Length: 395
Image 1: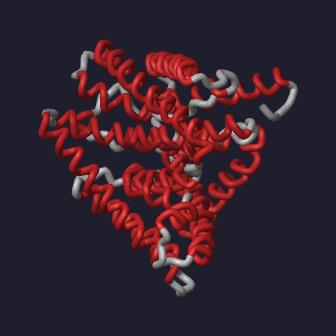
Image 2: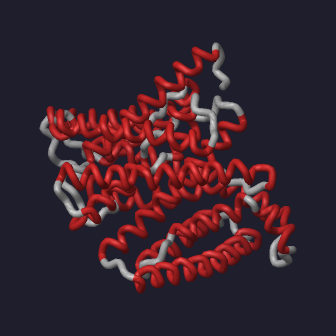
């Protein structure tokens, strides 16, 4: 049984790798196929009456936390801070922020009216639907012009981070919200920034000084440890991941600006490149495994419910409308950027992080999955249509 499980797992992950290689070239995100494969496996087990299967549902939060850390870390590697890109960063940040705010409040109002639920519950349930998935958007923008590709990289990475910060803020605010809550959050934010800067300095110096063949895994374990302790203390832990990732991505500039003497630039830069490659590979592994597991745990009856599909279509339409509005406001090119607003792993991770007492029964895995599929299909067909209209695969 153990050998069969290992063979199955290896085949599934190799399939995910092949899908990642092939589908990305034709701008089809592998997420849809991985979800379908996971769901298909569960149906095979059901038809064959195989019941001696572990409860994978318990693995989702653990894989989700690892995925969240790795996705934000990988996304922050893409954020190169340069003077000539300041206007792109401001535009993309404005677009990401407006999109998150508009979708959160619009959907909250809709959920509040339709489901007759408390507005604070509606707020926390809309955050997972407001975020663009950078893990899908960035690879899908590979054939765009340099300017548009950079906009997608900054916007989707910042959208992930803003969505997570919004989620943490609203999660605390719905419990109790007054002036002391705001001061408490500001204090926690400041404390987390100080912890992040000192931890980042320590980890980077460690990266340059460790001569042991095994150095990256202990580093990743320390990152997870710092993140987990911060979460236990109810601090915005992802600030640390963001600051650490940004520091690695822009270490050359930081080293020159601050004249850091405790690390040698050449040695650390080489190790940073190796570490970034490892993070990218681990992110692929965790992301693929997570989508397979999520697909496996889907309830077929829920996915096929017409009322769930109708709500998914409404949410997708709102996402597209908001996308058009924000692009107009920031003055960016509408086509093909309007097509790139996919939902994916980050949305599932935020959804499963909602406390059970704040959940809305109708906002479930089936709804999130349908929105992911619809937004990804919209992106695929939109980019193909736009490409044909241009008469080339480069936009």
